Length: 277
Image 1 (spheres, rainbow, N blue to C red):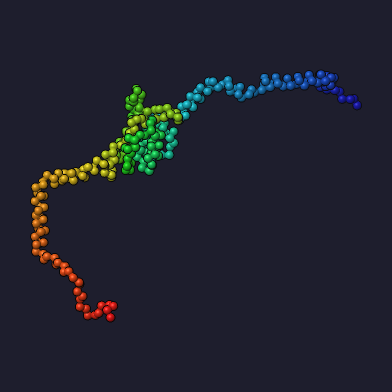
Image 2 (image 1 turned 60 degrees about the vertical axis):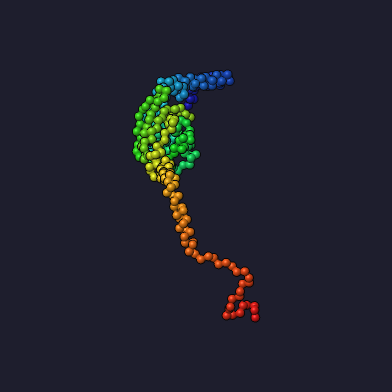
């Protein structure tokens, strides 16, 4: 039976590799080299190098869209109500001028806060901290906000435009002027100085009398006092008349008995005195 012939392709390679160690090393290095070149030519390049060439054109559009989609200062005068801003964060409220004005008014009429808490929460929406004038103008009776805001753009100081917002309340309209300012949270709307306050005379009509009514209640007293002092002739004759009337009955009274000196007589008793038996 004839012997199997050697593979005409692998036999020469096997003889060449096994001929010496040098040939074996060259074969291994060559194999790795061929695989590396094939991978570089036909394989997929790494993602960072591929996306890096495409980022410039795409990144410009994406960055612009991200900036427009990110929350920031809004110049749209979207009117709000007191209930629509409830539960919103300070940052989201500060993006809108009407919302900032409504938040300011909500804190301004809040009666549940102490003076320090009231100033602290009010100062979040203002360019400067509330002073003594604002604290003295704080409502001392409950005041309700009666409707949504009404906003308009007005000319501000320094040529900058500002927004004036009207917040209707029981005690009248609270007019709030706001301007865009740069703060730690970024560009936000802030209430400008002087800080708005309600008319105290209108607040006092809600149930608590004003301090100005106190002199009115004392006016009759001050008016009657001059009348009594300007007529001494009328009061002076009455004094001797009253004196004479008191002395006339005293003349009809019997004179008081005069005490008699000497021992006090013992009265006659039906029973003997204790201790005399």
